Image (cartoon, rainbow, N blue to C red; front, side, top):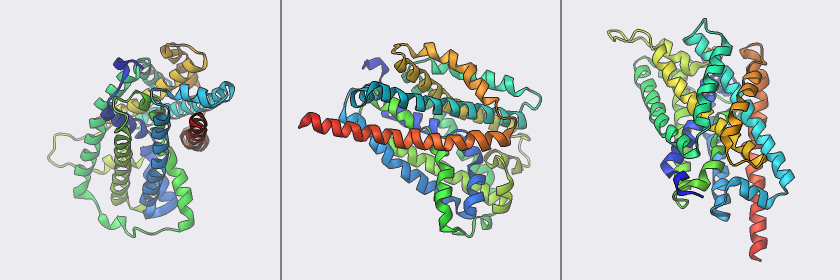
Length: 364
């Protein structure tokens, strides 16, 4: 490992937050309201807490084999062919997620900003933009995350400030209007919104201080939980549960409900979209970077940037397969939930168990 490619724990935290908070936050409040009514916050908390053990597993994995990358550990504890199959699964998940994120991004931009711009142009422009950062080293990707991190914080603070005067807090109650058998469905619905923390499989080996990295990762996920809770309660207080269920992207639509009399800003859509573009950039950049790195390892090529440009037409083509937004959510969204379950929970757990067993045997 070269020192010039190491990243600080603060950068890892920022990378974690910016990668996780992406397109999923747009529809999260309405998705949870459909299943759990006013009690969607329960799924947000439980879903986030369920992620924590798997972050611990990832941290422990690299402490078992200090100085080794995820790919080196995987090839050490598994047969190369089996590990390549796992990498192909993760790669397929990343490509599908990038395709889905690109399509949702384009649909949102068309509705709120560029109504007459073709979807194809928006998607292609965004993919070309993120390919620039994706071809860089992980250290550069982490630096970009540090720049986007305060934008997310600023947007959340802005959302709170402008909505507080108009919020109807009676809409939040009852807080426990729930059928407990629906909680597992709610957790499954929220899983995709926590996808992205698997970027730690690439980032943790390059941490400058491995001893404290877990603490920063935990803070990052707790911050994501906090952001999701704030967005859920703000949209719920503005719309009420019945109206919230009918909104497609309540996290952005809630801005239109704000009236700022006497302010020089009459249309907040432009400001919100500017922040939204950066949030999506912070999610898609690391995923495209990871996809290039995975392909580089599969083909045993040192420079991952060679594989980023060929991925763009693949992602572009897949993103245009659904005819409309409903198909995107029904087909790609549903498949992604299962892919996420396999890629961010099952696969890291299997590799950790195998690594732990092999380490015990080596010491015996």
